Amino acid sequence: MIYIEQPPFLPWLGFCEALIACTSVALYDNVAFTQGGWQNRNRIKTANGPAWLTVPVTHSPGQLIRETRIAEGFDASSMVKTLRLAYGRGPYADEALQVIVPPLSAGHNWLADLNTDLVTQIALALGSRASLFLTSRIPPAESTDKTGRLAHICAAAGEPELWAGSGTRRYLDTAALAERGISVLWNEFNGRHPRYAQAWPKQGFAPGLSVVDAACAIGWAGVAAMLRTGLHAYRPTALMGEPR
Image (cartoon, rainbow, N blue to C red; front, top):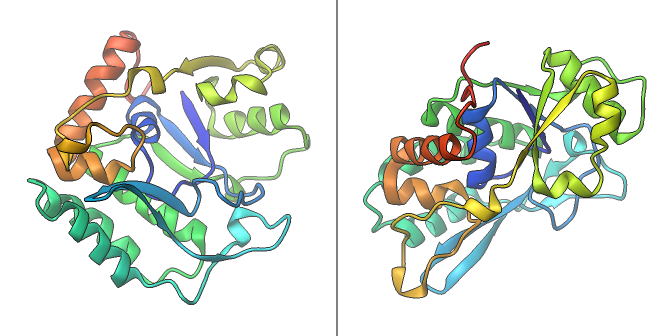
């Protein structure tokens, strides 16, 4: 089973579940960068409530994600300081940041490289067995429509099943994919978002934050176990990334 998504910055738990559920995860970097999307920003929880962490980039209309350069003004040390202020009291903050800080501080010039580094290290911390790859590294698809390109990515990975987020229902043509031998399994993660002992509890629980929020609270092993438990309840027959 494969999951396909534009490479996210400090991804949320729904993406991390795919790292556990799937045998392949494709980082779709040869599509247009979306300003205001999740490719260069994500949310954490602070003393003042949820807040954005944003990597500044240089952007022009039609620019692909793989062509998106990190702006010279990006201050990784300032971002790390923000994370420590937000989560320094968390029981697993040091463990969580040991995974996050090296990619942030590596001096990447390109957004796709930074996000790939982050996703790779997070996958390792979660014990993921998924094969990660950038879609720009495979031969280009003959088809230019969304369905054709998705089918091409699945075929390149040798995966006949697509793990699809509920947000893709508005455009994913499952019938056309079926004609190409690709079946779709829906991932309705928003409705079953897990709860955990989140930082700043008086504010109430805030869903949809970066995985760093959960990792600082319950550790990487705790996040992996939580996601596996939820996945098993949702899809009891899921292979959870195990080789076919």
